[in-house]
Length: 165
Image 1 (tube, rainbow, N blue to C red):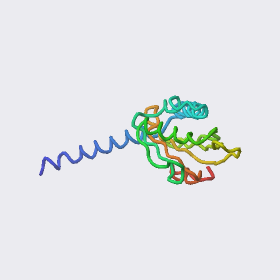
Image 2: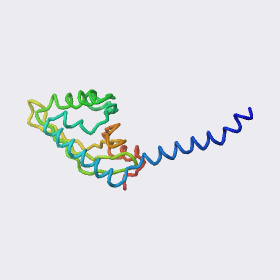
Image 3: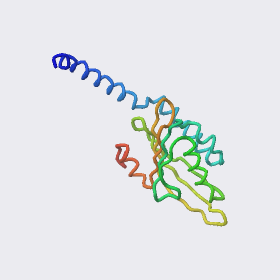
Image 4: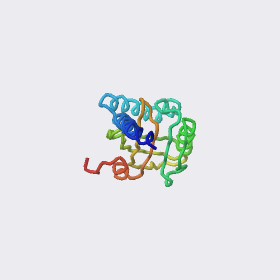
């Protein structure tokens, strides 16, 4: 029991140190955020061209991709192949898709992207439009998570920001 009590301060110090290291890793520097935003811009451009392979280049191999249940094919997809599967099927029923990032908002290790999307379904002449938000979490220069929101204010709330920011 004495040995355990003697180790307690060391265990607490170790646990605190690990927590501090993790906390420091969860905030993107301005340079990291700018680099991540450049990757995101390239990914949206690639998606608009229909180049799914280029769209997913910035993703971590174990990425978790989450789309709202209300979206066609909505759900959670795992890994790059899962993300590619979702992205390909999201374009399958469309003659044309345009996803334009309107604003990038860094918050900790995440970047919120306000997106204006236009879809022209195959066999239709009527465009469908939606304003949504995608939230990406970055670690070591790669996106490890993408969470889409139909409501932009929900995305901001999810990352701890208010709609006024």
